[in-house]
Amino acid sequence: MKARNVKELKTITKNVRQAAQAALDQGGGVVRLAPCWVPRSFLQPGKRLKLKPEDLYAFGLDRGGIDERWFASTTAAANENRTPDEGLSYIVSDGVRFQLKDAIADLGAAMIGEAIWKKYRRWPVYSKFFDNMGPIPHHMHQSAEEAALVKQEGKPEGYYFPAQHNQTGNNFPYTFFGLTPGTTKAQVRKCLEDWNTGDNGLLDLAPAYRLKPGTGWLVPPCILHAPGSLCTYEPQWGSDVFGMYQSLVEGREVPWSLLVKDMPKAKHKDLDFIVEQLDWEGNTDPDFKEHHYLEPIPVADTCKEGWVDKWIVYGRVKGVQYFSAKELTLKPGVKCKVKDKGAYGLQVIQGEGRMNKLNLNCPKLIGFHDLTEDEVFCTAEAARAGVTFENTSVTEPLVMLRYFGPEVNPDAPEGGDHMKRCGC
Image 1: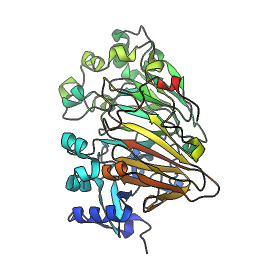
Image 2: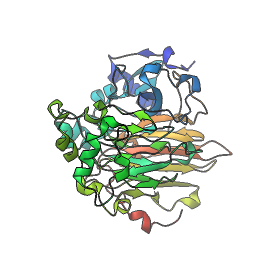
Image 3: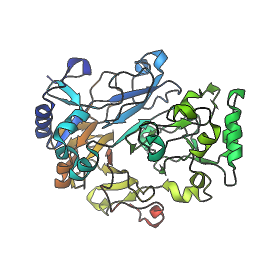
């Protein structure tokens, strides 16, 4: 009998190579992952992750509610008082579980491909759902150069708003991006000076954009953004660095420590240094939407065959493709074989079916310790050989999101290419 929850599994840290290879053989080059839940103490959960309501505070009230689920992650969550494995995904197979991070360390290129393994020696990206009742503070993620000052890595990120997780927009389905063109550094510095007076007024300097399910954005490092209340699929670099520049959100205090947590300690009160961490040209770009807004683009014209694969997150940050993502949809009863250029993490957001030798099933409700059949990791070798997908439902589509590592898809669109797309 298969294990139904994490408590029934034995956690192993030794002989991971053997267990990982056995799991890959059983799955036809793909392995099943257990749900990975992450809380945030400074935010209110949006209740669209399908987590049981009674488990929203499973980490404890002091840790905050669970508003994120991380996918195929080898990146630890940078939360205070976190559990030792917070943010780290586990492979589940034959009654045991072991970290995806350990399997990749042992199997290397066989898991993630020669190019990524040779350059990074790890899976350097991850994705997540973040789901909040209201907006997140206006914040940025440091660049590689700035994050290196505190021995961390920078973080570009992408957004996609799947319709299946956005039946309601919650309190504020709008996102502030950057700063209004013409804003001065002195104005932002004044906002920092006013931190302890209440609302420091940073949003008075920023434009907001209405969020639309089925679309997305590409957000480079050092760009201020205050994500709105749509549930968001977020491929990103494998880092959890950030700096919150807004002092008050919906009446909730944002502590100064969340502004400077990833800045050198000697600079924690240096307002000029903090302002200079921002990409000024990028934040005040008068054509910001044109350069960062994304709409799905079909990979090929396969609609008549009953399935369609679409690019949902794409584009480059200063010439580098850090990640990319696709959405694959199969109509009821359809079967197809899809080839990709590299490894990926996959998440089922609607329907049921099969992927090579593994069952797929999108759950209606998930307990904190429950195991599911909605998340897998596909090796580079299996992806290149082609994965067979089948929708076994007779009533609804099978819909899956999958994200890829750096420079895997040189044929992906560039920002703005959705203006040229054909309908599908």
